[in-house]
Image 1 (tube, rainbow, N blue to C red):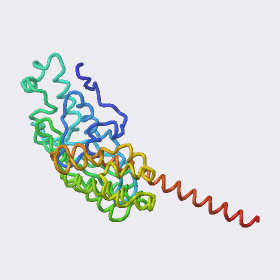
Image 2 (cartoon, one colour):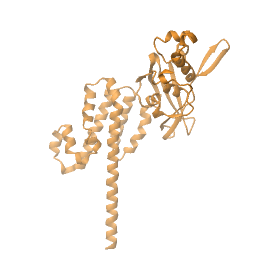
Image 3 (cartoon, helix red, strand yellow):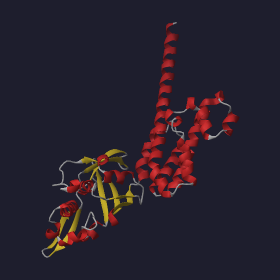
Image 4 (cartoon, helix red, strand yellow):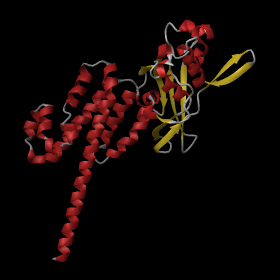
Length: 316
């Protein structure tokens, strides 16, 4: 068959990272959308069939957990009464009709819709217009991660989530509490919260503040090794060059980050800001990861130096 439509729904469960719709649910901000098309319809069928497991922070367990969901069930009526059915199976049936050679003779209503491909037909329009994906924590079936999506016009649009993107991301910042002040972590939380609410340019304001704070921390480490007056009058690129010995390579090799943040605040559209935000956030995470590694290395060197000094004192 064309378009690689399943002969049957796979039995195995897949990782959320390998399913484009599950990945979208976990990473997209509110009101972002992606197209449902022939090339990714199988991924949607797998998700609807409950065959996707995702890894996420559980707000109640306060730890990273695996979440799974049951197959998506909808209710329909016919002459014999009301019955329940897997939405995944109905979507798969519709797609088979689209690609089968005898679609017109086997299902007239579907053949009329073949002039424009759709992932669903009128029979499940009401049941599938708004989808709620209810993921459950593997360690406690009373801990949930819910996503709400609208599916009009072949668009898979995220319109709700609880816990929020911000709630699930905040714990990651605790890893950097020794290289970031509490105020900086609050700024980062605000940036993530604004992004999750669909406010791009506002999120960039806080990311830029964090970047500037990183430079101030490096300036403090440098102390008298740099000319403070010259530093204060320098452009950001020049400041990075002056502090290159005190900054992580992830920052010194990605000096365009500051310019992108500034352009986002003053020139880019909200849509552009939201599209680029995850990459910029990850870049800052990479910088912080390296800074934490530098801190641990310095701490270990101090510890070994102190231990060697103590040994030397004891044997002399």
